[in-house]
Picture 1 (cartoon, one colour):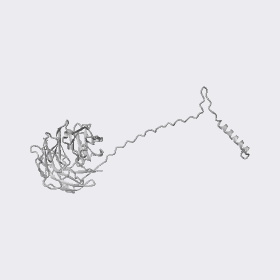
Picture 2: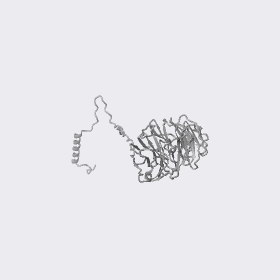
Picture 3: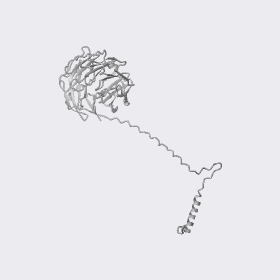
Picture 4: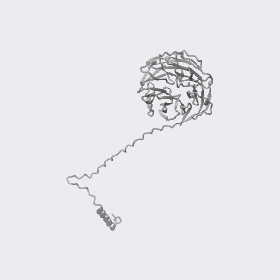
Length: 421
């Protein structure tokens, strides 16, 4: 090493002093000494153990909150300054027009009141006085809740002698009255766009053309008083009780021969835009017939809904139903021969089978469940309860419910109320 590379002597002394000072302060680095009877651990470097990963404590997921039911309020329809104020008779049937821009009430005197629907409200009342008003004495013995025809061109009331009266809606024409059963009174009535279908208390059924006012050549031999269902186009009729049968109303041809069932039928309907006829019995049995096949009973479908149903109302053109059994209410969807039945309970609805009534919108997308002291408004598609009503004086039937938001009920003094969000 050259003299230039050699550190000065004073630097070497300084380095030694610093080293001695560090040794005295920290101690010399010595290998660990073995305790008595214990071997000294190897000085080989061991790999550090893998760190233990402690999973985070599970966080309880917050359950979705039950949506608060809408608090609907009602507005009384004011007729004090309108022509409809002079109508003193009771509303017998009411409903929305096919486009839901008009609302009709037909009173048992034959008087009509026509409203315009604007933003969910009934406005611009127009009274149509009958050419021949009908008065009633005593308690009527005719069927209740008879709807207007689907096209809202026809309405039905009954005379004091319990004879059916067919009114042309929107006109002052005198009603067409007939004596359908000389030895009996009417038990059930249906109106299609072009037909009147009546059944007496013995089970006899007659069909009349609304255009010609003549009885059609149709004979239904069913041997019992039965539930009636008519196809949407008015071309077919089904009768169901302890047995079921169906006919073509134009020709009288038998579409489904009389087929006995193990349990009485609690509801029957044609499925919209299909050749299917469906029924539900009181034991919860679901039955389906394809009327386009040569032998419908041979290819019938029978399934179990899983619960005995005391009351059933079909929804959405037969694609769903609301059933009541044991005080519990549910919507059954996806009915059909090959599709699983989806059950959506309406847990919030608590009502007895005896008093619960349903009022379904024209297309079946919404319905009202009325238990007398409480009323629920329900959407069919998702079984969502829109509102719960109770404790009000404006919840008397019959109800009329639109597909959008309008809801109409009776006032306790005979007027109307519109329920608004």
